[in-house]
Image (cartoon, rainbow, N blue to C red; front, side):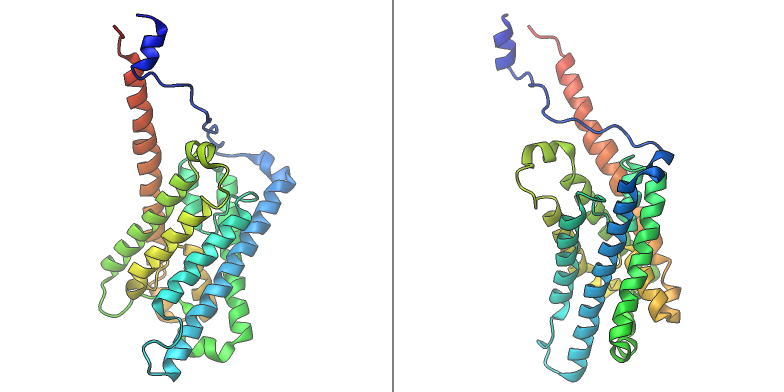
Length: 284
């Protein structure tokens, strides 16, 4: 049979994208590059802005509902979810080309497990994110100290009526949704196909944060970001916030690990194996 016939029966053209090589576990060279420190600054500032806007939104909502018995007063839970999702969309769009736009230790951890970033970069990103979160909440307290203390400081806490197991499960699943979306939105194959749409990656990531907040605000206040939870706990410094703090680290890290394994070793590896098996079939 001529080669044209083989093509007509479903052979695949050469792929128009390339998977980047795995990041080295330890990359000391990064420490000598200005681009690395520029990325750290971007992560610090982005997380600071994220916490500043979102915690102010939470406190503003609580102050409005305390003053007004109208259930429709203030932005409501929907508005809080929009604040978190919208800020992630904006900040990922702004920083994706500089640092990758992680803004979340759980996202960084998931990308590290998938060998997208080195251990050095992952650790330094997490430090920058946590420091940025603490500074962002510190600014909120500095500007509105009385409201901040009166309305809970935007700290994540397990809500009444829910067990720690339920809270942990909510954080695991919520972070899985977020990190799974990050992997999908930044997939090299998708980028090669949709590079002409610059907001395509930030948009679904922001929507994932929005949707998870709608589901889990009544349970944990929605963490899915250890830096966000730590920053609020450090500045508010409440016993309940510290007692529940482990949930907002263990849950997101487990969720991120599951998402990294699922996407990289099941979805992507499965597709490669299927394609290889198809190509290895003898043609008639």
